[in-house]
Length: 401
Image 1 (tube, rainbow, N blue to C red):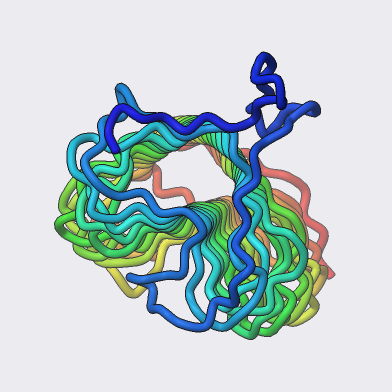
Image 2: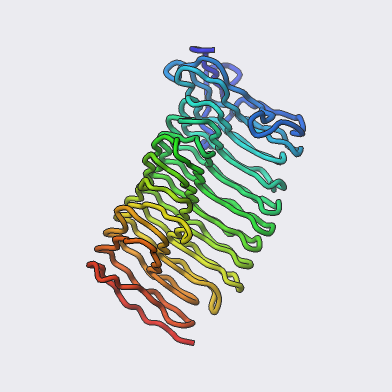
């Protein structure tokens, strides 16, 4: 109900309150669900805590709770579900969500268009997840699921299901958040074959509202499953028609170790005619220790589609690949349009085949006033591509084996 806040974390005398989930003296009120998650689809997950009705975030807050959803089962499960909210939603602040091991785990799920704000929450995975779908925050609404997702910490754990897809923050084709900022996304590990780990995975089509992802930190770990794909940002932007801005983030996908695995700071796929802006980010390509074609990319764009991009003032650090195997690429540019690539600084990596820039666009693409450093190759030389558009290329020594 509107104008009724739920405030946990009080001592028994109700004089002292410790409601910050990142504080050492955190003493939250616990909400625990002991059911088995055996039913319900993604639109009707079994939830520990549901928010619904006409509520206004200027007067309604939920904070200071430790929420534990079901520990097992095969169905969809969420710690918190937002549904059928009218007015502006609520402020969901300073709560801890501990995800455990149902079949399809979601920390916060929404199918409403005005959920409110998610501020300073901690979402953490406890133990090994054996399913194949894990989401810290999942937006399934049509329109703006949340106005702000700010200053949250999401710590992913281990996903052991085959072809597991684990995302810190994800959206469906029509959903969005207006502003995602100042969050820390700690990536997890997929240990089975064909796993995928993503910090931010918006799956956006033509009716998605404008969305900004800024001033976030994406931290990678080591993905040990065969063929694992790790992306700090995986942007599936097919038919995007409204603005998406990625700015001032630090993005590091971490490392992968086995099979034809890949690490990507930013991975873009989908055909769209609306520019996506990437401004002033620090992007790391990650590292691959795989001995069968393990690849690393600072930015990787799908070569089979046409994506319009405005990539400016970014600092890109190319990663490393195993000696004799795979490639290390700062910018992998496919079929692109839009404002192009201007005033970026790309450092070359090391390992097998090393490219600060690898470009094969099928349409005119502006690559101008950038600095590219070639890196070090121990196989067939390092390479950059000079398109003679005011770019500066700095050679580094290459060892030919």
